[in-house]
Image (tube, rainbow, N blue to C red):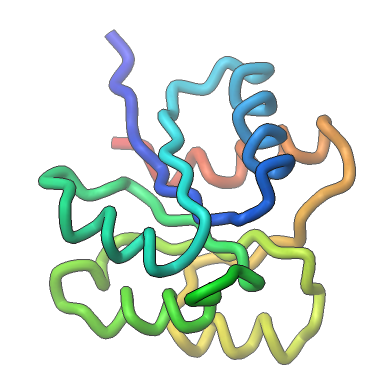
Length: 131
């Protein structure tokens, strides 16, 4: 039996959340996504759930607490710093990428424009959640 892993995905764009869910279903991956809309909700989720997610995905541009701030909080907390974090954002700015890598992001990806490209994103996330 295939194990199901959870990815905590923070993005305030509901359309992008739908793209992710559809892409995962299209390639038949065994990942459960938990969606939240900002960094504060990520931290709330982490503090309430007993089982940590296998991976956290962050958009950079979110209300209340953006992806950079969230990444910094996660990586500075001894309880959560070992959870891999991937940035998936519209920004292809080298400065953003450098900042995120310096803060501890495991991977930085630019949001795609098509369903097929979203499937490629999901395939890039899968190695982070394997046993």
